[in-house]
Amino acid sequence: MTERLSSGDPAPGFSLPTDNGDTLALKDLRGRKVILYVYPAAMTPGCTTQACDFRDNLGSLQAAGYEVVGISPDTPAKLATFRERDAITFPLVSDEDKSVLTAYGAFGEKQLYGKTVTGVIRSTFVIDESGAIEKALYNVKATGHVAKLRRDLGID
Image (cartoon, rainbow, N blue to C red; front, side, top):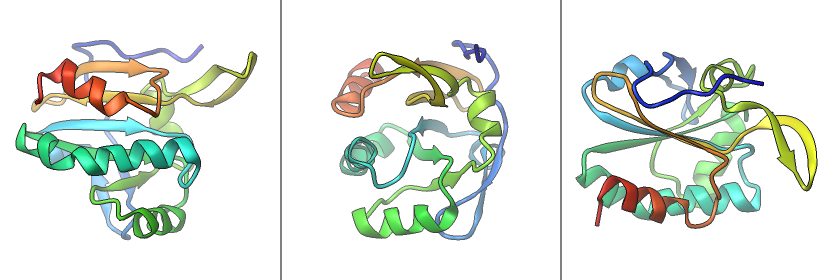
């Protein structure tokens, strides 16, 4: 079983390619609050719903001081297509070898339609300004997750 992160743990660092050809490193976001959300595959129904939900709530999340970053094992090219198709307005990063997903406990065994499989575990991590995990949420639902997260963070 992949080890899961808890509140207070240091957020594992990363430097990954983005959907627009840049590289995004977690250390570059130090001093800001970050919502890092993990999704299994770009352009699938649940992942599209979740990304569009973050997109539609980005203004209020940013007004509350949060940066949003999406991470999946998709290639940067597929992420670029996803961003353009669905007007995603926050960075999407590619973890093709799943090393960062594994470090966050977001890749491993999970239940899928009653069977145990190995794959990406839909998760969200709230990282504080110093780089520590504030919240580690595993097995989140694609639909309604952003609204629940906003409530949990006290964002109107």
